[in-house]
Length: 151
Image (cartoon, rainbow, N blue to C red; front, side, top):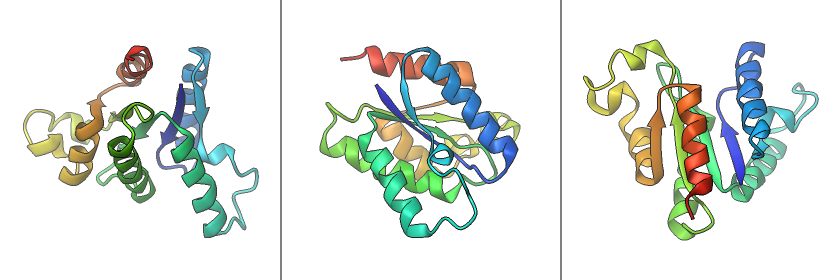
C-alpha cells in the first residue's frame, strides 16, 4: 500500500520526525511518499514544482497519514487532507482513508473535553469522514496496518 505522509517540514526536527515515521512504515513494507524527500535542495524550489510533485504523490497514494500537531493544522497538511478526502469519495476501493496523528499535549489535554478534541472542526470532520485520529505514532502505524489489511 502506498502512503502519503503529510505534515509540516520546515525545520530539521519536523523533517526528522516524519523521516522516523516513514522508516517505521517502510519496515512494514509500506511504500511511503514523503514530500521533503522529493527535493534535495529546499532553497530555490518553486511553488509550481512543489504543487505538481506533491499532488502527484497524493493521487498515487492509497492512504494518507497526516501529522496534525500544533495549535493549528499546518496549511499544506490541511490542503492534502482536503484533496485526499475528495479522492476517497470518488474511488473508495482505491483510496482507503486518512489517519490523523496528533501527539500535541495541548490537544491531548482537550481530548474528550473540547469539540473535535480541540482540533479544527473542519479538518477533524474531513479526517473522520474517511478515517480516524490517533494519539501516538504506534496507534497511527497500527491504523495504517488495519487499512492495508482491510479489503
